[in-house]
Image 1 (cartoon, rainbow, N blue to C red):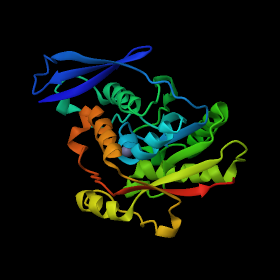
Image 2: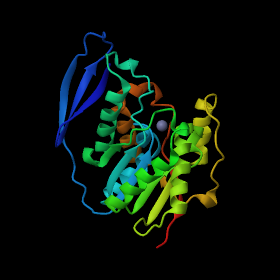
Image 3: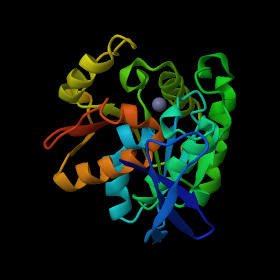
Length: 268
Ligand SMILES: [Zn+2]
């Protein structure tokens, strides 16, 4: 069995194949690919605001793929480095805060996101509810203004499935949308899984999290149906998060499932 690890260079990404199982002393790695970072074609900018490295692959992969194919330049802001995550499956003596951001770079590379457009905001994983929500709003708003973003993508207030950190970010972004003047931001979306997909996910993790209300059909502004191609990229993205492989199948999607977004601001 193999897992994959990426190392980011200035202009390229090397993917390593790591042999498992392995001891803590020996992490046997061999390079398998040298990939050029693709150059996005367009100039319109979308900003994804999320919490943990791997959220982008679980919850927003279809929209990210479609935006990239349409020439959007995607920026990603992570509230945390996912440092509370368990990475022991790697069998290496490495901490989550060091490996999970690298995995995010590799996953996002698959949808054209450059490393320099990925930012970790430095909030504490698992404790967003205790931290300063206004600081999160200010950081995101300053970023959106600086890059002249036209689209914001983030969580709904339920955090997709009731995860506290996700919900905090969703509510903070709603606060921001209400209180700031959106002179440059044209669209914003809240990610929310299709109800039928939520039902399937709920059965897997409802013992851990309280499920939020389901969006109704009338609330869904945009739905992207899962094609075989989109699903294949989603799975590739998830597999870049080797340290989180125990979760890869926690949020299953299949052909015909839809990744759905609530459009809350659409002035044009
Ligand atoms: Zn998360």
